Image (cartoon, rainbow, N blue to C red; front, side):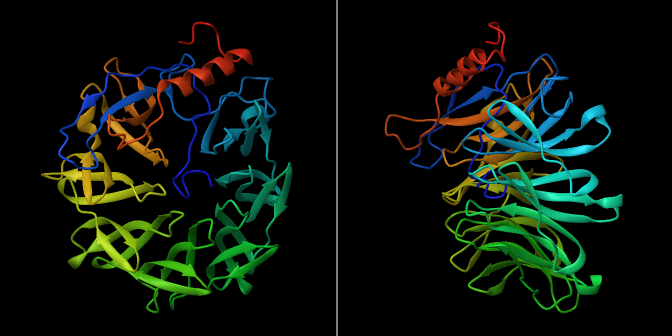
Length: 397
């Protein structure tokens, strides 16, 4: 499954420059953070900003557009995201594979919007229907766009897909009387129900078919995160406050999300594992928010510092929270967006020269091999491949 749904796999698709910055050693007290760290600059194609994006040039791609951005990438280097269609008059979903951007198309309306990509290159999202009066969940596979229909109402939208091709999302029920989470599997859309309220929303599904999301309770004014497994929807609960929301589930069935603490005076990131809800704490401030997690249960997010005037990105691993911004004093406005199973963290930051750049932050293995990370060799191999495909000038690095 591609990031961010499982938050465990990503591959930068456009890599026009690489720079391995000198790593900063951390104190080795036997903790999981005893490693050296480095950043890999994803470079740019002449502009001031670059992230994990696919760029199409006028006339060269299937969509004839200048602007596109990848929201999801898989281990094959396939990507899916948004681009303006011919004439830049509509926002359309695309699928990128083997050097070509393919227009996903629509279900009769003007636009289509991607929300997930799996390891096989299947894409999900939602599309405007004829007359742009409503939207329907779709599955794009092998060049074909399929309407997943609804739970009886006029609207549906997909939010994630696993590697088995199971799709989750939400849909209006018959008469548009309610909005319920669904699981689409083997050609059939299943209503997952609610935690007692009128509405529920599925967020993601892992490769075992475990679904997470949010649902209103019986009072229809409070919502809680849920786990759906074995035909049962279970309330994850909260950290003492009124509301919680699910963010991601990994292959081990661990769930992360955010919850109000007691008295609703703070929001905290949480880990739900083995039936236990754990408050991840903060970097000294009041609030923290989780954003992604890998298969090992390593979590990324943001947290207030002491005084609550500044937020910083963090990595939470083995019960400890590390302020990632302290590792690279030359970078500012560091924002993390994903983490993979090699503990590589993707994000953006502003460099000393004032450019906003896409970065991959990696732990460099120490002699004991406690952390494994990708060296610059793989990145250079990608650059060499791109040159071979005549997509990079010889001065790219």
